[in-house]
Image 1 (cartoon, rainbow, N blue to C red):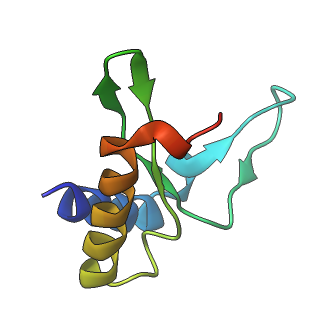
Image 2 (image 1 turned 180 degrees about the vertical axis):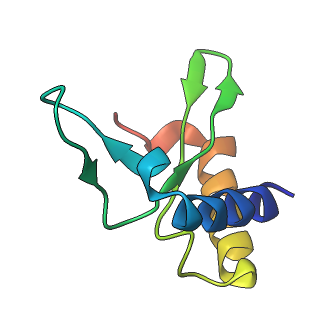
Image 3 (image 1 turned 180 degrees about the horizontal axis):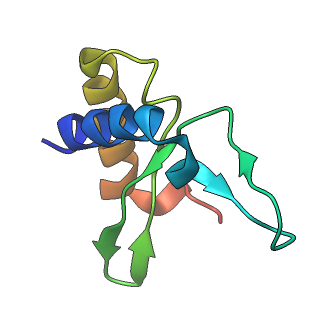
Length: 82
């Protein structure tokens, strides 16, 4: 379900690029070339936000596999350093 939501969000961002942009100087927008979707997950010590890279370009099956890989790492965070 998470991969499906990430894919739907990424495809919506492709259609509305301004939502995936930033305005740092108060005058002009910088459009990001990549659409990377972070999903917040609650843990005992706080939140962690794994990122699905290029979610607009990757097929739903690959996104789902990547999400499962990230979830395994999160389930056993002993090797995470930062």
